[in-house]
Amino acid sequence: MGKTREGKTKHFRWSAPMERMFLEILADEASKGNKPSATFKPSSFVRVAQAINEKFGTECEPDHVDNHLRTIKSNWATIQKLRVKSGFQWDHNLKMITVVRKEVYDEEVTAHPTHEKYLNKKIEMYDQLALVAGKDMATGCFAKQFGDIDLPSSVDMDFSTELDDNSDNTMKRTEDPSRFNRKRSRATNKDDRFAMLSEQIGEVANAMKKLSQNHLDIAELYKEVMGVEGFDEATIVYAFDYLVDKERVAKAFIVKNAKLKKLWLEDFLNGRGSGY
Image 1 (cartoon, rainbow, N blue to C red):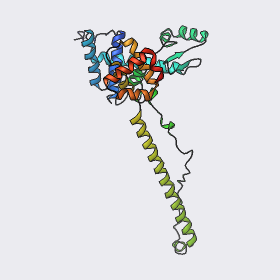
Image 2 (tube, rainbow, N blue to C red):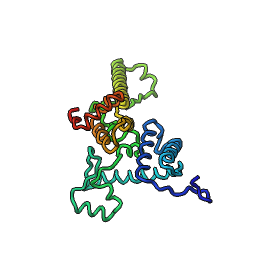
Image 3 (tube, rainbow, N blue to C red):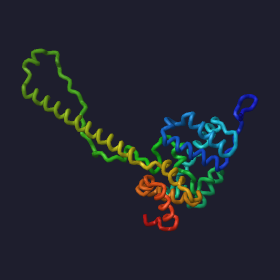
């Protein structure tokens, strides 16, 4: 199925709904640890292909999914370059690359017409894109870099090694006791410094462990919000965007039961969400 006579995979055309499903499933796969490196496990591609076929009655194959992931990664690389380009600004809340000056916008679009779709428009499913196409799992609003962890400004470490002249044995026999005491004191100081460094490394490890345990899982949040029945997707996505930026509220939402989730969404969508 889906092969030519030569055994090559036929071209597959991706519609917008198919791509949305593609991103949703792979984001879920990434959150489950099925993206051990820069790409996904083959089982993830199989899952996407099967879901696409069941939903849309197509002949999508895992190779189609793998090929489309390359396209998504290329698009992601373009987005990341545009975010930091001179004259461009990144709006984290709106997930939008803004270009205020018309001449800068016109110059970019003239030189790269395909970039127009990324400018002054909300980038849909940005967080899912980050999970799927980004290099790491911890990206976007639920990641904290190692350098952000507070550490003492400096640690005075002396790793120099003193070399003794052992060629004259008579000198060793008549060594000044005060010199020996000084050497023992220096050794004690080095031990203390190593102990201090070990303690600080332990603090860093604990801080990183807490970060990994407490971060907001965007893919899980998306699944929980979109899984509440009784709301259309175009409306409920506003609640999802709000929760992404309100991490404490989002964590509370995730642990609510189905009835309380629905009540919260009704309140929010009726205009009372601003009080949360």
